[in-house]
Length: 58
Image 1 (cartoon, rainbow, N blue to C red):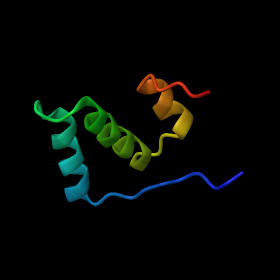
Image 2 (image 1 turned 120 degrees about the horizontal axis):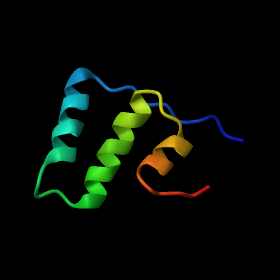
Image 3 (image 1 turned 45 degrees about the horizontal axis):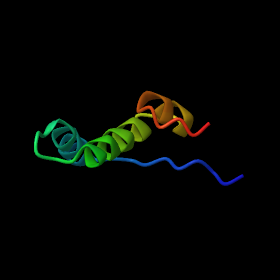
Image 4 (image 1 turned 30 degrees about the horizontal axis):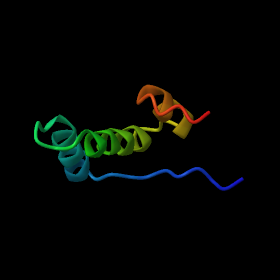
């Protein structure tokens, strides 16, 4: 099994993703991806992120 992906965000990148996820004219798919990236950077596992976003793959 491959190692789980873990990203690290700078404070500026985190702030940009937060703004992107809250913007009105951004497609929902893009918002969810921004949320998923932030959750991963905060230590959430893929299963937890999928469940939170209702992307249940498991």
